[in-house]
Image (cartoon, rainbow, N blue to C red; front, side, top):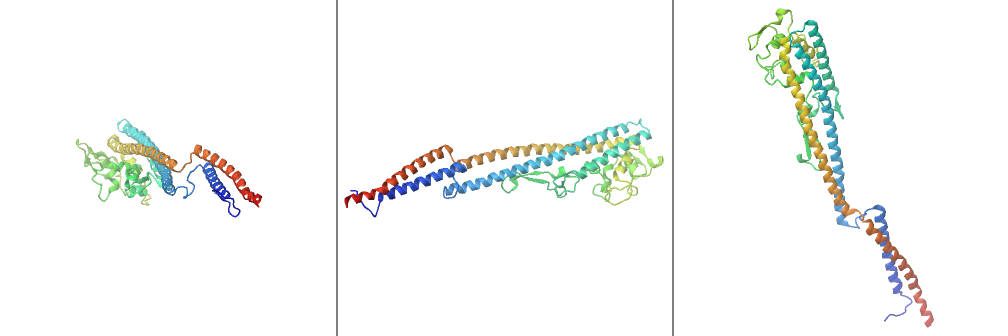
Length: 362
């Protein structure tokens, strides 16, 4: 049986508790509606907050990985563009050399061909020496990627380990200067690994470049088909280190450059020009191989970017289901608690008047 008391107003206490709960519920709904999150602090959902924090770290990591991959694509695109120009120059050099190999050109014409070839070779060297990406020299052979033969690693995922990187092979970043390209395809050369490795460009084998060998080394040389070449008899001096800088102007020699040595040796007559075609083909093949490899890497990196986007999307979706507020639900809760707050306040006012009934009994 309920009793009328003055010191203790149970009805008021109950109304106060319900008013507090309604106010707290309404404030929570307002917070969630204003932030868009149903987890705004650890007390809202301790486990969910922990999981969401880890997921947000992964999402941020995927953003960085995507940026890394995009920078890698830009690096590859830069290298490919310059190599394309080098390839065009080499093709022009080959066309001129094939003209010189025809045997119908006199000294003036050969000199004109030599002049253009020399300028194009110098431009190839200039391009390869200046092209860089974010401070990394791409085609002069001096980058750590080339010298260490470790290439460039693209971090395309959140975690450590080799499965989270794409390694761009170091051969892409090896020197693409004209002398480097001409030496690159000459593994058969007798000079490779000897005291004169920088002369390797002129000799692919023992006798298959007899005309060039005679022009460079001096003396008489016999080819496989028993043709004899002796340019000293024609008044030419031999092309060697005494007159030219084999190190491509890196030795400090005041003499002519290695490019000049190549041109002077090759564009002497049709025989030397004809033999030089195979060296140009090697250089064109080297550039073509690099461009093909770059294209393959670009496709792979683009696929990695697509994979990153899918992984990020899945993590974002999972995090959203844990952390994001349901606006419809929170709106309903806000209205519900607002009504409860108003009704509790009204009833609290009524409950506070109840003890006055005791005055009628006195």
